[in-house]
Length: 456
Image (tube, rainbow, N blue to C red; front, side):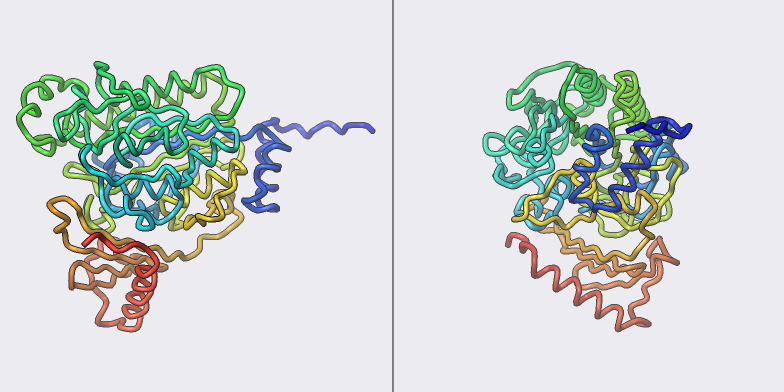
């Protein structure tokens, strides 16, 4: 049988087009066969930042400059209606690790702050790492874990082959001490004292991981602690020894310091992406960039109100983009409403990895949207938040986004917003739309009955 020559397009274009068609024809559950038939299974580089606000990247906002991240966004699809699974760190990470609403697990209801806290991600819970590992992927977490402390919980107990980073929610960038004043820097489950600015150390380890010889695909979760407080840029080691030695991590800071933290983060991602390119793996690696919740004190929250800890848009909407050369077209901006655990479902679909049937995903596979074969469609998403800081005395917040409607409850107060015309959530429309208010209130209560209650 004579083999017909391919048309005058690059092999990468041909493979990407064929793979995209097969993905759509077979559906997410059969992507593994499609990938195996057309190209090597894609590597996964998942970059998660900490408290990065919606407008902190210059491609989304106006205040700070992030050229490397802007370029990455332009090389794939950038989402403008992307939401965190929660308005604080731990639950969003749980949502990503499990592909499910964080409130399905006790650790998704409260943040483990110090080593004496006993809540964490159960080792028996399937995670994106354990599922990919079972499917032949080399798995690594570099950076912030914040899903439970040793001896009961760790990345190594939840599917990661290796871990380099911090267990708690915040560390000093230079001393690497946590909120309790103890060193929180680890190689696996062994504490290490390693000098350097945390952002740079995480970048260096990611580069080292990416450039190793390997004979299997990889999944690297690179969870930067930046730009989370304390407010220390790479030139602020003196602040670490003096000011933050005797003041709370949340103290101090300035827009200029925040800009320096963001520049270090942006430079680090640039180095990681260059290493990926230089190692010849960029064309076969899906790169996903996202934040774990809305921004903090010095963030640019764009047109929104609210920041971290709030269920207003500023506390939930986050910068998100995905690059997959040869498969996802560059320079795309998509208004589809998505949430953190959709990224889990998408990674599993793209790698041909089946979720555990006993733990069905709440997330949706975004590949049809990313490939332009499925139009933007309405979503209904739910949030519920009560802070566990200060003896779990925080006010209960609830929110639903359904289509363009946003239902928000803060304590006993209820609001209804039309996000299509009011992204800043300035005009409460509940009195003019009682049926919509009741429908969303009912939808929330129905969902609320399916997840765990907050601890008393």
